[in-house]
Image (cartoon, rainbow, N blue to C red; front, side):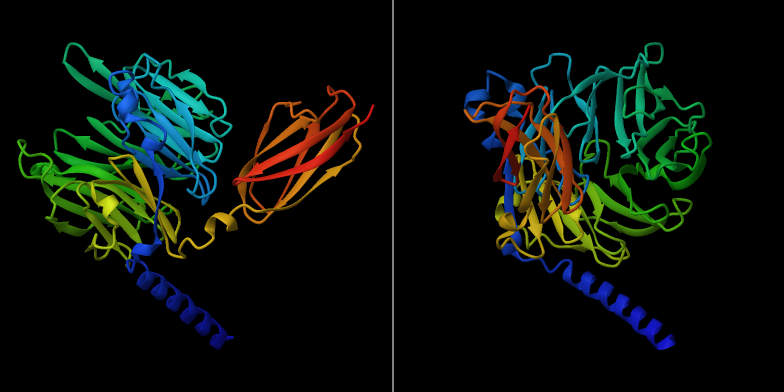
Length: 470
């Protein structure tokens, strides 16, 4: 038994070592451009007509799982959200609110599950979808605030955000933390606030753990504020004294205890975009933070994104092709952008990991590139193949069960047409988490006759005959 346990331990260690060695040995041929905003918006015709759509920046990438990712293009006014359901090979526009006059700067976005996307903007407006982007609800916090920003939700509908109020007497903004337990439909302020002058990046770490970074103007300290009971009580742990003007850039956790945090120390107030990058790590849920990096990079810009694929491998990006990565859990960081194809070199902005072996990088020109350690040979054909489908009963009089068998979890659409090719019922959007999916469909309103069930999945179209009986 001891020999078996020793063998398993050695195998795990070897696997971790192998993964860490692969990460960073990127190959240029494994890059692929998967999105370009100009394919959707024509700059030449839109400039001067609808300047909202002129802004093509790929602002943020978020992935709910290995297949479902959302791209938020929202510099300036309005937001344009694109969604992929096949791991990034195809994208579709699911929200264009740039034409809404009441929608201004987008200040927060969250994408915790394939069907649930939520964004917020000033003044106190929220748009949310619970069906993957097919329909959207316009909501409000009803907190009489100027703006709710930096929102973060989990898949169960629990979310947090920063509420901004402008104090006319002081001429300053004041900040509070708010929460929602119903996917953003209603909001309320936490009864117990962290109690400092400013809050940054509130996050829902689990169903009960909420965190944020707080600033105390009196002591000039940044604190990591953590609650393990959904914000009913808080503990505050010092991160750093900000005498050198250190400011929070990003932080992320891979579980309840292990996380990383990046700070930026600008040279002066006159040149706030040039300075030193600082990275700290915690292994006890944020109670203590250990500095792992304090360095002036070239170019010396703030780190815009910090994402980890697993407990060992992570990437930070910034403007002007600054990219650093780690293969040992953030103990050491390597700067190397030589592997990036020329098109990405303009200005790297954001990144996201749909899986530990694949990641996206976007730039300010509205392009998104995907890196796949396995390459792209026949990847489009491999994703989402429909093996077979069944209809029972057939003929059917009032309802039937439609079952399909897939090679890969994915989103797809079911449509029913009559023999003239006219849609007989509204289309049904579905998502299969496994290789088999079943849907009960009501056809009691249809006249008797022959129909076709059309399924669209990953650009593959299948048709199954259905007989409607009396």
